[in-house]
Length: 372
Picture 1 (tube, rainbow, N blue to C red):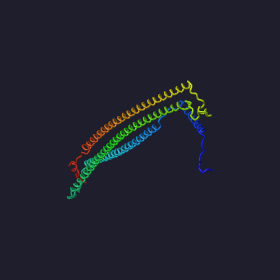
Picture 2: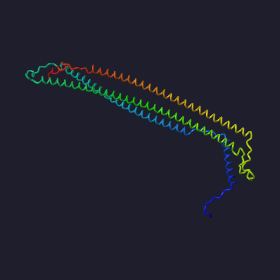
Picture 3: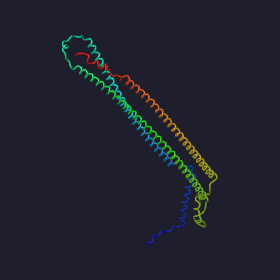
Picture 4: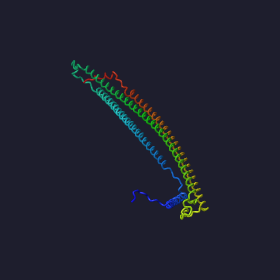
């Protein structure tokens, strides 16, 4: 065995035969690909479509999260407002009940006093021997004064209680108005921030769509240039190949027994009908490509017009929402003014009509006028 691993050399004619066979098979495969009418149809750009779908899904997700956040904020503010409104209604109901109880108590006391006076008037005056004694009740004057002071103190306490309730009611109303004003300020700020964020996202989306359109146009131009160069190259290779030119290799010229290998299938060229068929197929492919490009151009223009209409509709809807918010705010202000006017009217009625019950000196002089 030899010390060096030397490979056995191949016969040049055998190598040439193998290379010629490979070239022949490659030319056959190329001819099938060139003559096939459907191999030259270009497809769509899947990567660009996937990027657009991804961007739209991300924008939809961000829009959904932002809407959920603002909806939760609106629900929370509405809940706080309802709680304050319910609390205010309960306080007003309680004050009304206490006022009604106070009125009923005053009416009952007045009725009892009138009944006692009427009963005292109807009693006959009977002589009693006890009144003949001097100094029977020496502390009657002091007791009368104490009773009068006690009655006056009770009335003052009731008036102070009513004033304290009125003060608490006014403070609660002021707190409620302050909370409502704060809620509307926060809501307006949130709406302004949301509009600002939507504007920024719309501008970003426009820039992204513009960049994607430019990239798509560049890819289409590059694909067209590559396809054109490939067409020219394949056309030159096909026209200059040994299959069509019947070129005999120099090594096989001059007395070789395998000269027939340089002429695969003894090709003698296309006939007139075959050449015309090839030209017709190429013309059909060119027309199909032009029709497809025109359809893509029309689809792109329709898509752009649809996007413009959608943006226009969104702007109109946004303006309508803003107008509706302005109208709702104006209606709310009108309602609050009406409520404030009703509250002022009710308060003036209570202060000027219901609570105007000043203590007259004759009220205290009615005590101590009867005997036991």
